[in-house]
Image 1 (spheres, rainbow, N blue to C red):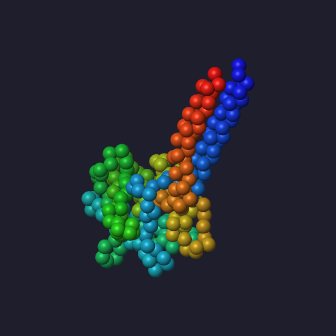
Image 2 (cartoon, rainbow, N blue to C red):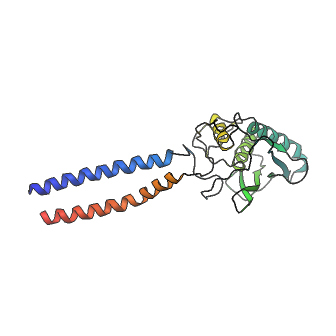
Image 3 (cartoon, one colour):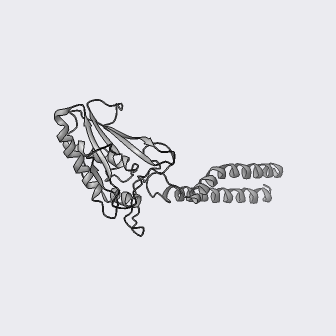
Length: 250
């Protein structure tokens, strides 16, 4: 066998392994930078950070409870107040949730016997957003079927309220904002870390979130994504070069 052919094959294999290593490293770097373990979207599929314009403790986000079952209104109100109190009491966060006293609320929770989500106990959507991406209203739809007990209903309220605050899904199983459907009725450290990062009481106060805080990505992140996209094409070009060189030596 031609010794030059063997050397060229070994060199090609080495370069291929280097490409694979760089690809894997950059992929992990892109996944874990900025948003830690966060799912890269808040409620929608856009890459925009959804955050209420809260700058100090004077800014209060109000909520209201509505239902097609008037006899259960007080019950749903109590559960909603409990959930709102947990989000309000997160240390290091400016966020304050309060029931609306007059006027329009920023968050509306609608407890209904049927919702337009056959495989979900609830969902949230920002139905009013300014051209600058500032939310003005978020609506939560929660299914009040008999199959949900009190703990399950409270967990759904906590979870969907988190979405209305701008949080995405978490990959931490114990978090309220995770995809798991369990009976957890209190916020996990991961939930609190995400909220305190989104609405920090002090700029110096920062915890690494596992829960998504929207989809903020730095400029460096987009540059990294561009590299990840074009790296396979570069690998193909290198492969074609070596393929031609190898054929010429056979």
